Amino acid sequence: IYKMWYDTYKVTDGLIAYATSQDGLHWEKPDLGIVEVAGSRDNNIVLPGRNANVVKDDILNEPAKRYKAFFWHGGPFLGMPGGPSGHHAAFSPDGIHWKVYPNNPMVGKDHGTSDGQFLLGWDPRHGKYVAYMRPYVKYFEPSARTVAWTASEDFGHWGPLVLAVAADELDGPCDEYYRMTVMRYESVYVGFIWVYHNDRQEYLEQSRETLLAFSRNGITFSRPFGVQKLLETGPKGSWDSQSAGICNVISVGDELRFYYFGSNIPHDIAGVKNGTHSWPGSVVDGERRAVAVGVARLRRDGFTSVEPEAREGVLTTTLISFLGTRLHLNVDARRGRVEVEVQDMEGNPIAGYTRAECGPISSDSTDIVVKWRGDRDIIHAEPPLPMLKLPDGREVVNPMGYKHRLRKPVKLKFHIKDAKLYSFWVN
Image (cartoon, rainbow, N blue to C red):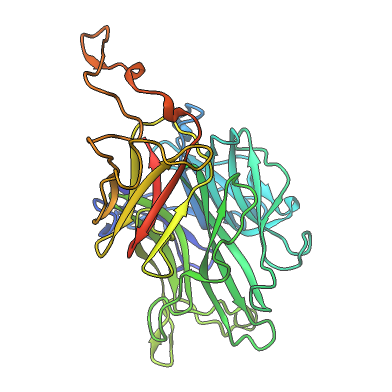
Protein backbone atom coordinates (compact mmCIF):
# COMPACT_ATOMS: atom_id res chain seq x y z
CA ILE A 1 0.00 0.00 0.00
CA TYR A 2 0.91 3.66 -0.24
CA LYS A 3 1.44 5.51 3.01
CA MET A 4 1.30 9.26 3.61
CA TRP A 5 2.25 11.36 6.61
CA TYR A 6 1.00 14.92 6.32
CA ASP A 7 0.55 18.09 8.32
CA THR A 8 -2.86 19.15 9.53
CA TYR A 9 -3.53 22.70 10.62
CA LYS A 10 -6.72 22.27 12.61
CA VAL A 11 -4.65 22.93 15.73
CA THR A 12 -2.36 25.93 15.65
CA ASP A 13 0.70 24.03 16.88
CA GLY A 14 0.37 21.50 14.07
CA LEU A 15 -0.25 17.76 14.04
CA ILE A 16 1.05 14.92 11.86
CA ALA A 17 -1.61 12.63 10.40
CA TYR A 18 -1.47 9.28 8.61
CA ALA A 19 -3.33 8.03 5.54
CA THR A 20 -3.16 4.98 3.28
CA SER A 21 -4.08 4.15 -0.31
CA GLN A 22 -4.21 1.14 -2.61
CA ASP A 23 -3.45 3.12 -5.77
CA GLY A 24 -1.78 6.31 -4.56
CA LEU A 25 -4.72 8.42 -5.72
CA HIS A 26 -7.68 7.53 -3.48
CA TRP A 27 -6.83 7.87 0.21
CA GLU A 28 -8.32 6.69 3.49
CA LYS A 29 -7.83 8.25 6.92
CA PRO A 30 -8.08 5.46 9.50
CA ASP A 31 -9.28 6.03 13.06
CA LEU A 32 -6.14 5.05 14.97
CA GLY A 33 -7.11 5.97 18.53
CA ILE A 34 -3.57 7.04 19.42
CA VAL A 35 -3.65 10.79 20.12
CA GLU A 36 -6.46 12.58 21.93
CA VAL A 37 -7.57 15.82 20.28
CA ALA A 38 -10.51 17.88 21.59
CA GLY A 39 -11.50 15.05 23.91
CA SER A 40 -11.56 12.34 21.23
CA ARG A 41 -9.20 9.69 19.90
CA ASP A 42 -11.30 9.06 16.78
CA ASN A 43 -8.71 10.48 14.42
CA ASN A 44 -5.68 9.59 12.31
CA ILE A 45 -3.14 11.70 14.26
CA VAL A 46 0.18 10.00 15.08
CA LEU A 47 2.54 12.78 16.22
CA PRO A 48 2.68 16.45 17.15
CA GLY A 49 4.69 18.80 14.97
CA ARG A 50 4.77 20.13 11.43
CA ASN A 51 6.85 19.96 8.25
CA ALA A 52 7.05 16.20 8.80
CA ASN A 53 9.26 13.86 6.78
CA VAL A 54 9.16 10.10 7.18
CA VAL A 55 11.58 7.58 5.67
CA LYS A 56 11.59 3.80 5.74
CA ASP A 57 15.03 2.58 6.79
CA ASP A 58 16.44 -0.95 6.96
CA ILE A 59 20.11 0.09 6.99
CA LEU A 60 20.73 -0.22 10.73
CA ASN A 61 18.65 -3.41 11.08
CA GLU A 62 16.74 -1.98 14.04
CA PRO A 63 13.09 -3.04 13.67
CA ALA A 64 11.90 -0.56 16.31
CA LYS A 65 13.42 2.27 14.23
CA ARG A 66 12.42 1.03 10.80
CA TYR A 67 10.50 4.27 10.22
CA LYS A 68 12.21 7.54 11.05
CA ALA A 69 10.39 10.85 11.33
CA PHE A 70 11.89 14.32 11.23
CA PHE A 71 9.66 17.28 12.07
CA TRP A 72 9.65 20.78 13.51
CA HIS A 73 8.23 21.02 17.01
CA GLY A 74 8.00 23.75 19.62
CA GLY A 75 7.82 21.87 22.91
CA PRO A 76 5.64 19.48 24.97
CA PHE A 77 2.23 19.02 23.38
CA LEU A 78 -0.75 16.67 23.71
CA GLY A 79 0.95 14.78 26.54
CA MET A 80 3.98 13.88 24.43
CA PRO A 81 7.48 14.79 25.60
CA GLY A 82 8.97 17.64 23.68
CA GLY A 83 11.87 19.92 24.37
CA PRO A 84 13.05 23.26 23.03
CA SER A 85 12.07 24.33 19.52
CA GLY A 86 13.96 22.57 16.78
CA HIS A 87 14.04 19.56 14.52
CA HIS A 88 12.66 16.64 16.47
CA ALA A 89 12.87 12.96 15.63
CA ALA A 90 10.73 9.92 16.36
CA PHE A 91 10.98 6.21 15.58
CA SER A 92 8.42 3.54 14.75
CA PRO A 93 8.30 -0.12 13.74
CA ASP A 94 5.19 0.38 11.59
CA GLY A 95 4.90 4.10 10.84
CA ILE A 96 1.88 4.39 13.15
CA HIS A 97 3.06 3.89 16.73
CA TRP A 98 5.91 6.26 17.49
CA LYS A 99 8.44 6.89 20.22
CA VAL A 100 10.04 10.29 20.24
CA TYR A 101 13.81 10.66 20.43
CA PRO A 102 14.63 11.07 24.15
CA ASN A 103 17.06 13.96 23.58
CA ASN A 104 14.87 16.06 21.32
CA PRO A 105 15.40 18.33 19.59
CA MET A 106 17.79 16.21 17.59
CA VAL A 107 18.87 19.36 15.74
CA GLY A 108 18.33 22.48 17.81
CA LYS A 109 18.43 26.14 16.88
CA ASP A 110 22.04 26.24 18.03
CA HIS A 111 22.82 24.19 14.93
CA GLY A 112 21.93 27.27 12.90
CA THR A 113 18.73 25.98 11.31
CA SER A 114 15.07 26.94 11.26
CA ASP A 115 11.94 25.06 10.13
CA GLY A 116 11.68 23.86 6.54
CA GLN A 117 13.77 20.69 6.54
CA PHE A 118 13.66 17.65 4.25
CA LEU A 119 14.97 14.23 5.27
CA LEU A 120 16.38 12.29 2.33
CA GLY A 121 17.36 9.33 4.50
CA TRP A 122 20.29 6.98 4.00
CA ASP A 123 22.43 8.02 1.04
CA PRO A 124 24.63 5.13 -0.16
CA ARG A 125 26.84 7.52 -2.14
CA HIS A 126 28.01 9.18 1.09
CA GLY A 127 27.35 6.31 3.47
CA LYS A 128 25.41 8.68 5.75
CA TYR A 129 21.93 9.92 6.54
CA VAL A 130 21.30 13.14 4.64
CA ALA A 131 18.95 16.04 5.26
CA TYR A 132 18.42 19.41 3.61
CA MET A 133 17.91 22.23 6.08
CA ARG A 134 17.00 25.89 5.93
CA PRO A 135 19.78 27.84 7.62
CA TYR A 136 18.70 30.47 10.10
CA VAL A 137 19.24 33.67 8.15
CA LYS A 138 21.06 35.45 11.01
CA TYR A 139 23.72 32.74 11.09
CA PHE A 140 24.29 32.15 7.39
CA GLU A 141 25.12 34.07 4.22
CA PRO A 142 23.29 35.23 2.22
CA SER A 143 20.84 36.73 4.73
CA ALA A 144 17.80 35.22 3.01
CA ARG A 145 16.18 31.82 2.94
CA THR A 146 18.48 29.22 1.34
CA VAL A 147 18.97 25.45 1.41
CA ALA A 148 21.88 23.63 3.02
CA TRP A 149 23.08 20.01 3.12
CA THR A 150 23.92 18.18 6.33
CA ALA A 151 24.69 14.54 7.14
CA SER A 152 24.82 12.10 10.05
CA GLU A 153 26.45 8.68 10.41
CA ASP A 154 24.16 7.52 13.22
CA PHE A 155 20.96 9.53 12.73
CA GLY A 156 21.69 11.38 15.93
CA HIS A 157 24.66 13.69 15.51
CA TRP A 158 24.48 15.97 12.48
CA GLY A 159 27.41 17.68 10.82
CA PRO A 160 27.85 21.32 9.78
CA LEU A 161 25.67 22.95 7.16
CA VAL A 162 26.97 23.19 3.59
CA LEU A 163 25.20 25.62 1.25
CA ALA A 164 23.42 23.57 -1.43
CA VAL A 165 21.57 26.22 -3.44
CA ALA A 166 20.55 29.88 -3.14
CA ALA A 167 18.68 32.44 -5.19
CA ASP A 168 20.83 34.51 -7.55
CA GLU A 169 20.58 37.32 -10.08
CA LEU A 170 18.22 35.26 -12.28
CA ASP A 171 15.58 35.24 -9.56
CA GLY A 172 13.29 38.08 -8.64
CA PRO A 173 14.68 40.73 -6.25
CA CYS A 174 12.62 39.37 -3.34
CA ASP A 175 12.74 35.66 -4.18
CA GLU A 176 14.02 33.25 -1.55
CA TYR A 177 14.41 29.47 -1.43
CA TYR A 178 11.95 28.36 1.21
CA ARG A 179 12.96 24.68 1.20
CA MET A 180 14.10 21.96 -1.19
CA THR A 181 12.96 18.35 -1.36
CA VAL A 182 15.27 15.88 -3.08
CA MET A 183 15.00 12.48 -4.77
CA ARG A 184 17.74 10.11 -5.85
CA TYR A 185 16.94 9.48 -9.50
CA GLU A 186 18.99 6.83 -11.32
CA SER A 187 22.60 7.94 -10.71
CA VAL A 188 21.88 11.63 -9.99
CA TYR A 189 19.92 13.82 -7.57
CA VAL A 190 16.92 15.91 -8.55
CA GLY A 191 15.89 18.77 -6.28
CA PHE A 192 12.57 20.58 -6.08
CA ILE A 193 13.07 24.13 -4.81
CA TRP A 194 10.16 25.92 -3.23
CA VAL A 195 10.85 29.40 -4.54
CA TYR A 196 9.20 31.95 -2.27
CA HIS A 197 8.10 35.18 -3.95
CA ASN A 198 8.47 37.30 -0.84
CA ASP A 199 7.40 40.93 -1.11
CA ARG A 200 9.02 42.23 2.07
CA GLN A 201 7.60 45.75 1.70
CA GLU A 202 3.91 45.64 0.79
CA TYR A 203 3.33 41.87 1.24
CA LEU A 204 1.31 41.89 -1.96
CA GLU A 205 3.06 38.75 -3.23
CA GLN A 206 3.58 35.81 -0.86
CA SER A 207 3.33 32.74 -3.09
CA ARG A 208 5.47 29.61 -3.49
CA GLU A 209 6.17 27.55 -6.61
CA THR A 210 8.64 24.80 -7.58
CA LEU A 211 11.89 25.07 -9.54
CA LEU A 212 13.95 22.11 -10.76
CA ALA A 213 17.48 21.58 -9.42
CA PHE A 214 20.13 19.02 -10.30
CA SER A 215 23.22 17.54 -8.67
CA ARG A 216 25.69 14.73 -9.28
CA ASN A 217 27.02 14.63 -5.69
CA GLY A 218 23.86 15.45 -3.73
CA ILE A 219 25.55 18.40 -2.01
CA THR A 220 25.80 21.30 -4.48
CA PHE A 221 22.90 21.89 -6.86
CA SER A 222 22.48 23.82 -10.10
CA ARG A 223 19.32 24.94 -11.86
CA PRO A 224 19.56 23.70 -15.47
CA PHE A 225 16.42 25.60 -16.49
CA GLY A 226 16.99 28.79 -14.52
CA VAL A 227 13.77 30.25 -13.14
CA GLN A 228 11.46 28.22 -15.41
CA LYS A 229 8.85 26.65 -13.12
CA LEU A 230 8.47 22.89 -12.94
CA LEU A 231 5.20 23.27 -11.00
CA GLU A 232 3.32 26.57 -10.96
CA THR A 233 0.53 27.75 -8.73
CA GLY A 234 -2.99 27.37 -10.07
CA PRO A 235 -5.10 30.23 -11.45
CA LYS A 236 -6.86 32.72 -9.18
CA GLY A 237 -9.72 31.02 -7.38
CA SER A 238 -8.18 27.55 -7.47
CA TRP A 239 -7.28 25.55 -4.34
CA ASP A 240 -3.52 25.84 -5.08
CA SER A 241 -3.45 29.45 -6.27
CA GLN A 242 -0.85 30.55 -3.68
CA SER A 243 1.39 27.52 -3.08
CA ALA A 244 2.52 24.54 -5.17
CA GLY A 245 5.53 22.91 -3.53
CA ILE A 246 6.61 19.38 -4.50
CA CYS A 247 7.05 17.20 -1.40
CA ASN A 248 7.79 13.72 -2.73
CA VAL A 249 8.07 11.85 -6.02
CA ILE A 250 7.21 8.22 -6.71
CA SER A 251 7.90 6.28 -9.90
CA VAL A 252 4.82 4.28 -10.89
CA GLY A 253 5.09 2.35 -14.14
CA ASP A 254 5.77 4.75 -16.98
CA GLU A 255 5.05 7.90 -15.02
CA LEU A 256 6.37 10.00 -12.16
CA ARG A 257 3.88 11.16 -9.56
CA PHE A 258 4.64 14.43 -7.78
CA TYR A 259 2.79 14.79 -4.49
CA TYR A 260 2.70 18.46 -3.63
CA PHE A 261 1.64 20.94 -0.97
CA GLY A 262 -1.05 23.23 -2.33
CA SER A 263 -2.84 26.17 -0.77
CA ASN A 264 -4.89 29.23 -1.63
CA ILE A 265 -3.55 31.06 1.43
CA PRO A 266 -0.71 33.59 0.98
CA HIS A 267 2.32 32.98 3.18
CA ASP A 268 1.35 36.17 4.97
CA ILE A 269 3.95 36.78 7.68
CA ALA A 270 2.62 40.27 8.34
CA GLY A 271 -0.87 38.83 8.83
CA VAL A 272 0.42 36.23 11.28
CA LYS A 273 2.10 38.95 13.33
CA ASN A 274 -0.88 41.28 13.49
CA GLY A 275 -3.57 38.58 13.77
CA THR A 276 -5.17 39.07 10.33
CA HIS A 277 -3.71 35.95 8.64
CA SER A 278 -6.42 33.80 7.02
CA TRP A 279 -6.05 30.32 8.49
CA PRO A 280 -7.50 27.16 6.88
CA GLY A 281 -11.28 27.05 7.17
CA SER A 282 -11.76 30.82 7.15
CA VAL A 283 -13.71 32.49 4.36
CA VAL A 284 -12.16 35.53 2.67
CA ASP A 285 -13.95 37.36 -0.16
CA GLY A 286 -16.29 34.38 -0.53
CA GLU A 287 -13.43 31.89 -0.88
CA ARG A 288 -12.79 29.17 1.68
CA ARG A 289 -9.13 29.08 2.61
CA ALA A 290 -7.56 25.62 2.55
CA VAL A 291 -4.34 23.63 2.57
CA ALA A 292 -4.30 20.25 0.81
CA VAL A 293 -2.21 17.64 -0.98
CA GLY A 294 -2.28 17.36 -4.75
CA VAL A 295 -0.66 15.12 -7.34
CA ALA A 296 0.89 16.04 -10.69
CA ARG A 297 2.08 13.55 -13.31
CA LEU A 298 4.96 13.40 -15.75
CA ARG A 299 6.25 10.66 -18.04
CA ARG A 300 9.25 8.82 -16.66
CA ASP A 301 12.48 10.75 -17.39
CA GLY A 302 10.23 13.55 -18.66
CA PHE A 303 12.00 16.45 -16.94
CA THR A 304 13.39 17.52 -20.30
CA SER A 305 14.03 16.23 -23.82
CA VAL A 306 16.38 16.79 -26.72
CA GLU A 307 14.62 17.73 -29.95
CA PRO A 308 15.86 19.40 -33.15
CA GLU A 309 15.40 23.12 -33.65
CA ALA A 310 14.44 22.40 -37.26
CA ARG A 311 12.80 19.16 -38.39
CA GLU A 312 16.00 17.14 -38.11
CA GLY A 313 19.09 17.34 -35.95
CA VAL A 314 22.02 15.34 -34.61
CA LEU A 315 23.21 14.70 -31.08
CA THR A 316 26.64 13.09 -30.54
CA THR A 317 27.70 12.04 -27.06
CA THR A 318 31.14 12.33 -25.59
CA LEU A 319 33.10 9.09 -25.24
CA ILE A 320 31.19 6.70 -22.97
CA SER A 321 31.89 3.25 -21.55
CA PHE A 322 29.37 0.66 -20.44
CA LEU A 323 29.07 -2.98 -19.44
CA GLY A 324 25.58 -3.74 -20.73
CA THR A 325 24.53 -5.24 -24.06
CA ARG A 326 21.31 -3.44 -25.04
CA LEU A 327 20.78 0.24 -25.81
CA HIS A 328 17.43 1.50 -24.47
CA LEU A 329 15.71 4.78 -25.39
CA ASN A 330 12.91 6.81 -23.83
CA VAL A 331 11.61 8.59 -26.90
CA ASP A 332 8.55 10.11 -28.55
CA ALA A 333 9.00 9.58 -32.29
CA ARG A 334 5.38 9.11 -33.35
CA ARG A 335 5.66 11.82 -36.04
CA GLY A 336 9.24 11.11 -37.04
CA ARG A 337 12.10 8.73 -36.30
CA VAL A 338 15.32 8.23 -34.35
CA GLU A 339 18.36 6.31 -35.62
CA VAL A 340 21.59 5.64 -33.75
CA GLU A 341 25.12 5.19 -35.04
CA VAL A 342 27.98 3.85 -32.92
CA GLN A 343 31.35 5.50 -33.52
CA ASP A 344 34.88 4.67 -32.43
CA MET A 345 37.13 6.96 -30.42
CA GLU A 346 38.03 8.94 -33.56
CA GLY A 347 34.40 9.41 -34.60
CA ASN A 348 34.38 6.78 -37.35
CA PRO A 349 31.26 4.61 -37.78
CA ILE A 350 31.75 1.03 -36.59
CA ALA A 351 30.85 -1.62 -39.13
CA GLY A 352 27.56 -3.25 -38.24
CA TYR A 353 26.46 -0.22 -36.22
CA THR A 354 26.08 2.54 -38.83
CA ARG A 355 23.01 4.70 -39.23
CA ALA A 356 22.03 2.80 -42.37
CA GLU A 357 22.08 -0.48 -40.43
CA CYS A 358 20.01 0.84 -37.50
CA GLY A 359 16.36 -0.06 -37.32
CA PRO A 360 14.54 3.31 -37.22
CA ILE A 361 12.40 3.99 -34.16
CA SER A 362 9.06 5.65 -34.92
CA SER A 363 7.02 5.11 -31.76
CA ASP A 364 6.31 6.69 -28.39
CA SER A 365 7.80 4.55 -25.61
CA THR A 366 9.53 5.05 -22.28
CA ASP A 367 11.61 1.92 -22.95
CA ILE A 368 12.45 0.67 -26.43
CA VAL A 369 15.55 -1.26 -27.45
CA VAL A 370 17.65 -0.14 -30.43
CA LYS A 371 18.51 -2.86 -32.94
CA TRP A 372 20.86 -2.98 -35.89
CA ARG A 373 20.68 -5.17 -39.01
CA GLY A 374 20.43 -8.86 -38.18
CA ASP A 375 18.67 -8.13 -34.87
CA ARG A 376 21.98 -7.01 -33.42
CA ASP A 377 22.27 -5.45 -29.96
CA ILE A 378 24.86 -2.82 -29.14
CA ILE A 379 27.08 -5.62 -27.78
CA HIS A 380 26.34 -8.54 -30.05
CA ALA A 381 26.91 -12.26 -29.68
CA GLU A 382 27.12 -14.35 -32.81
CA PRO A 383 25.02 -17.54 -32.67
CA PRO A 384 25.24 -20.15 -31.37
CA LEU A 385 25.51 -18.65 -27.90
CA PRO A 386 27.71 -20.63 -25.50
CA MET A 387 25.84 -21.69 -22.38
CA LEU A 388 26.83 -22.10 -18.74
CA LYS A 389 25.25 -24.66 -16.43
CA LEU A 390 24.60 -23.32 -12.92
CA PRO A 391 24.80 -25.47 -9.76
CA ASP A 392 20.99 -25.53 -9.55
CA GLY A 393 20.76 -27.03 -13.02
CA ARG A 394 19.68 -23.88 -14.86
CA GLU A 395 21.44 -22.89 -18.07
CA VAL A 396 22.28 -19.28 -18.83
CA VAL A 397 24.16 -17.53 -21.61
CA ASN A 398 27.89 -17.38 -20.98
CA PRO A 399 28.72 -13.66 -20.85
CA MET A 400 32.16 -14.43 -22.29
CA GLY A 401 30.38 -15.32 -25.53
CA TYR A 402 29.87 -11.65 -26.34
CA LYS A 403 32.31 -9.82 -28.53
CA HIS A 404 34.34 -7.25 -26.67
CA ARG A 405 35.26 -4.80 -29.39
CA LEU A 406 32.62 -2.31 -28.17
CA ARG A 407 33.94 -2.44 -24.61
CA LYS A 408 36.28 0.36 -25.59
CA PRO A 409 34.87 3.87 -25.15
CA VAL A 410 32.54 4.81 -28.00
CA LYS A 411 30.38 7.69 -29.11
CA LEU A 412 26.66 7.44 -29.84
CA LYS A 413 25.38 9.64 -32.66
CA PHE A 414 21.61 10.15 -32.54
CA HIS A 415 19.86 11.24 -35.73
CA ILE A 416 16.59 12.81 -34.57
CA LYS A 417 13.81 13.84 -36.94
CA ASP A 418 10.54 15.28 -35.62
CA ALA A 419 11.07 13.47 -32.33
CA LYS A 420 11.93 13.95 -28.66
CA LEU A 421 14.70 12.00 -26.93
CA TYR A 422 14.23 11.94 -23.15
CA SER A 423 16.94 9.50 -22.07
CA PHE A 424 19.09 6.57 -23.06
CA TRP A 425 20.85 3.82 -21.10
CA VAL A 426 22.58 0.50 -21.63
CA ASN A 427 21.54 -2.66 -19.74
